[in-house]
Length: 209
Ligand code: GTP
Ligand code: MG
Image (cartoon, rainbow, N blue to C red; front, side, top):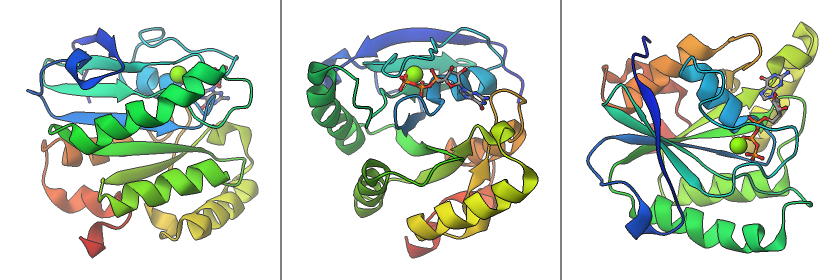
């Protein structure tokens, strides 16, 4: 995917602060520090468009970005990290639920999971919530550069089992090496209506719709 324009639009908590609902949108979510902001930078070929940090809790609002003047990406604040301040934690659920329940232009959500870990209770609860509400979800295992080939295969099987989805539907990604970028773009293009639906096979639960 050629990115000729990528820009930050605004941060928002409540729907009246969102940009107008006039472009197809994809959201990126996952626990704190899993690599959401780094993944978006990699997709957009930008080093620092989205702020990243070693300290979890860097992203605290819904951050909207516009890509090629055609789509919007929404970087979510992370969940599940003990040291994230209390008011950020309390704000997360209503902020995210209002967005996911009400945003008409939402085409799907990329759920990031750390390839080295088991999905946390928060990951699994959020996953179930998304499935119940029929949000289209692309599950992505991040930081795969930190795993050996053998460990990857084992982790992919384990994570997919916990999510009750096919191992082949879990996409492997590294913001460090760029691995998985083209595959993820192919899925996103399907979600955003840029190509036919053959790549939607990556979307967990698509068959049950
Ligand atoms: P919050 O905004 O706090 O929820 O975090 P986030 O999910 O946006 O994570 P962020 O992109 O800020 O990355 C967290 C840390 O992980 C940073 O130090 C990144 O450099 C590192 N990181 C992210 N993705 C990768 C990856 O694919 N490989 C490696 N090796 N490190 C990564
Ligand atoms: Mg972030």
